[in-house]
Image (cartoon, rainbow, N blue to C red):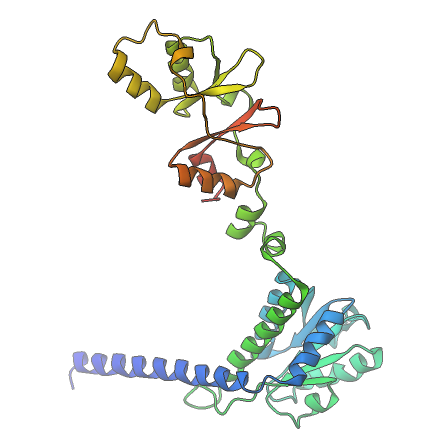
Length: 331
């Protein structure tokens, strides 16, 4: 057989195996859904009643899944942390209190490191939720609530490497987190507070005042100015527009590059023209306390690139360009 033929055969085998792995793991999760029962509800109620933190513990691959489950719980309204069972046996168990709930993750249910600390957890009076694939295991029998993550087989061809079992654990951990999220009425703004550095956090937490231009960076001229003075202000501040202010300091309107082009087409020589006759008296405005995401939506809906920011007395306090929103990663 040639090298090309061997490569082709290997590629076909890899694709077939990949599809089989995904199918086996998908089946394991589907079967898990059929076993969601009163035990799941008891576990959710324990988590909701927890006055401390949900402590997730495990070792090996189950430990890796436990870290992710703890992170998901914490980011969706259920204060949580992960503790490695081996480290817990050497001092870290001191972070677990009777106000907490302990979730022990072990597919076999016989992980020595977890079984070493279970008596101490029980003695403290900390509720214990066990997530295992064996309802008759030592861990399951000691638990206040047992969640069954049994799978028919691992996706590994040797039926050895934790694959389907860890996928089932992860899915059930996510189910616990989302059930608690829903019960707490945890919404998008709550999620954003847990993710201030993410895109959603920026969209839901940033205000116009956080991203707008202020002070000398805001182009503005009086309504008594000439068109040429307005053009100079537009060029200097580089926002493709300038605000126009009334004599009392309130916003009177706006004059943009587009207004200038249309004026040149109509009037030709603009050097002697007063601005008061040609500026737009219905500018697009927004308040400084509005969400930056609202400003983005307004600009998009009106097909504009700039917004003037005014206070309750219609005094100019800032200006916002679509590039400012892009720089803040709001859009």
